[in-house]
Picture 1 (tube, helix red, strand yellow):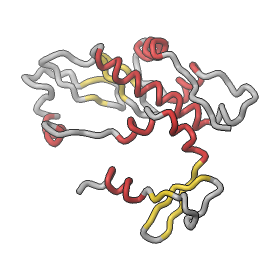
Picture 2 (picture 1 turned 60 degrees about the vertical axis):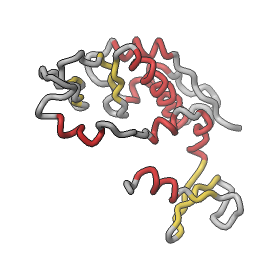
Picture 3 (picture 1 turned 180 degrees about the vertical axis):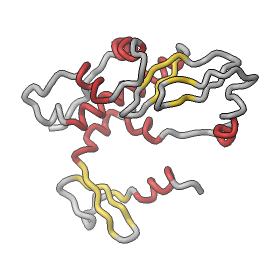
Length: 180
């Protein structure tokens, strides 16, 4: 039986996060929005809860962004905060949960502008967003990996690297993470 996505209301999640004065831990949000196990161990595994929450958070990231809010995604420091207006530094301090706030003529103050120079005029790809926004990836926890020299394989529980349906994910990972 395939686990199902646990639906978390985007509006309720927005309101919960915007009411917080400091970053919140993922576990606290899970406790608030997802009821305790109710007889179906496959549906309420920690991974299913985690995946369902991050699926909702990545959806919220875009809708909140359209409203002028930044959603910092870090399992230990989740925070929804209003993006500073023009002339205010937009460097975010994840440990503290707030933006720099120094007045500037651009997006970042002199202290922080060098940290972001490589991002200007370049495309970015968030591999985690790609993973969590695809509800089919909720079965990811039922898969396991194996290393054979030179290859990393993604297998289901009943496969081996010699089975015809195994998938080598090493080329994907190296293209996605290792800069060329």
